[in-house]
Amino acid sequence: MRIAGYRTLTAVQDWGRPIGDANGVYTGGVVRVPIVVVETDEGITGVGLGPHVEIETVFDAIEGEDPRGVTALYDRMLRRTFKAGHAGAVFGTIGALDTALWDIKAQAAGEPLWRLLGGRDRRVPAYASGLDIALGDDELVALYQVYADRGLRAAKLKGGLDVDRDRHRLTLVRDVLTEAGHGARPSLMLDVNETWTRKQAVRHVTELERTLDLTWIEEPVRRWDADGHAAVGRGVRASVATGENLTGLEQHRPLIAAGAVDIVQTAGGWGITHFLRVAAFAHAHDLPVSPIGTSPIGLLHAATSVPNHLVSELQDLVPPLGVSFGHHVEDGAFVLGDRPGLGIRLDEAAIAASGHRLPDSRSGGSHIRPERAGHRLHPDGAHPGPVDAALNV
Image (cartoon, rainbow, N blue to C red; front, side, top):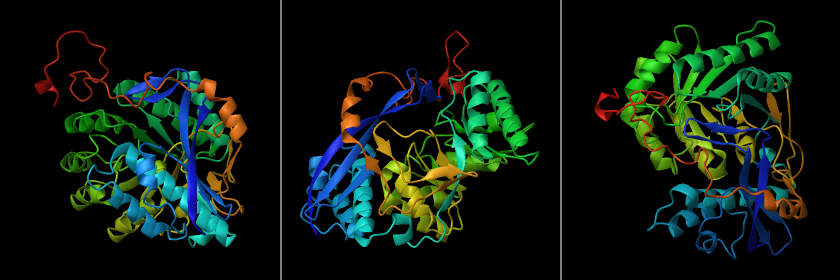
């Protein structure tokens, strides 16, 4: 079997409501979902969800190769981008191709990927994550009631701009999940997407912890700030979760070495081989790992095979238009299916027909960091007047 070619698609994820975080909001609730399809000379095709930036260059590293040698091919793709670097969207392209190759490998073996990777239990514990910063109280409660009806008893909210609002919203969701769990205490997490300085983080979380028990605080400071994450960890009771934006195993090393992370995260778009390596590295330090992403399908399969998986992020319950997954959600977990490979099926005609709904790539959203993020005296930006960044401590 040889890798013969690829094609790229862009599907539409329609959330039906505004979504976003402390950095910005997609007001229309419609986002792009890039997809890579890898073809073989034996007719088996693999699917990877992720970018296709500079894919011509990256694909050159694997064209004509046997896709079943996926781990070695992952390293070939890294070497192909050595000079320019494999960070950012290019790392996502490598991850998408890597995921597609794992899909092919499992299909060729006639097994679902979770089984091929050595998983025993097809159930992957999940937490609810609604990208919910733009929602009002009634909308927030209604959303997390939907998650609660699927058995989820853990939730991660977006916040970081106003401590009183964060407390109020976390309390609303806590009450929804507590009632659904017949009084059992739920797990609550807050994700601020790198919007604070270390002092802001400690002050904000400490205030929340006067009345709430947070399981973790996610990305409290910039992704590379090992000292800052460690300082936050020492200053609050909650665990510190980070790692979703780290592109490469080597970027996790300084945070783990500094004792700066309690929950090691990896993004669904970075690929399966990356996740497996990060999980092994974290396990060597007695740390749990948690996949994140809109559709972290490949990592759900991989999570069944690692000893330190904690919980995986569940965002939208509805897949992108023209995409179907071979799993379902019940009793607070993803339940993986028996289709060979990842279990992803594409309706390429439906994907093409929805192309007119793709948002303008220049439109606003959470992918754009605000100009003064982390350099405002008042984090919510609601107070007029000049701000001295030196006072932001």
